Image (cartoon, rainbow, N blue to C red; front, side):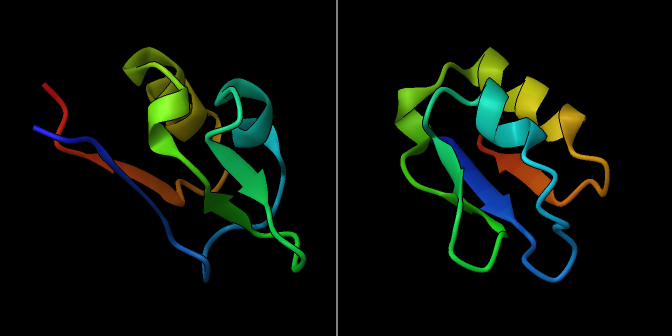
Length: 65
């Protein structure tokens, strides 16, 4: 099953924690909001840590094994 990473743009405050943890899977866009670039660049553990590091819980991961 594929992993899907979703970021709620209305909730994200652009802290950047997820960017540093996700190994290039998540970046801040021109508006300073996190966006998924390529979820497959990071391991599932990195994606989980990125989601847990979000101060507003804007990141959800679906399809985890």
